[in-house]
Image (cartoon, rainbow, N blue to C red):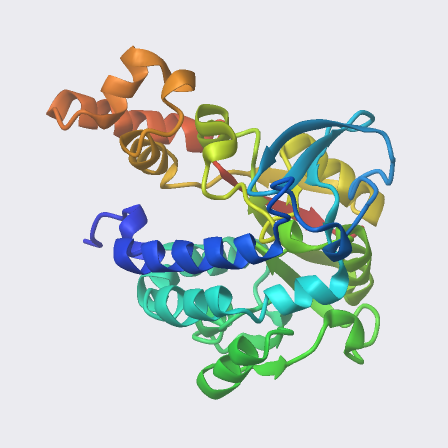
Length: 338
């Protein structure tokens, strides 16, 4: 029997504490001390990443970045955001390097078992063999799990040099260390394209999604995962949730807005699942840190943080309900190119 899965398994407490210190240091260097906002010379405005409208209202400000909601499609996104060259600098900063080496690499085995093998099993429910491309493959967790089965001819694209180099050395797949748009893949050359936890990072997600659509053969499948801000975790904790933060995450989809952007890409046969396992434990951990207490209320807070056995059963049943009703904080859209 596999061991219980907890947030600490994939985000070790001491390593995450150090990462957050480095992250804050990096953010502080971007801020204007007089306004508390990101310096004007570092940022640029952007249109809605779903519908391209330029009609929005401010929702909140966090760590110097402004989060807005589109008045047309209700998409939550960061605007303004870092200019492209500044964003590239950020993704090569000390905080990101520390996260890759001391969190992603050191939790690789448990992430493979609990996150990426279930994703491979999900893909193999729909497709039995063929060419598969993982866009934004990072250090290669998903591909490492994919190639355990010889039915797949596996490829990955990853622009971060450290991550791409690691994947090249440790995964038996063809890895391209560049942006997807810089590859020379022919149109309709893959049976499956995957995009795991990538779309939320992109300045212009629609452009990358359209490129992915071109690469999939007719009848082929596209799997995309991203945080679900319509889910239990975010409704409970709000802007204090650790997954709400720029410049890491620029786009905040729910089940409605992810379907809308995928429809605009060209996909029409779309189903969404939220196979989360840690929603309740994530909320429990954040409540213990004093975050989200007002939203949760006294009764629910007690039920979630108490160590009583009856409350443990409540939490387990709540997690099942959340996952089965598309309320998890992470969602997967399964799209067929028709």
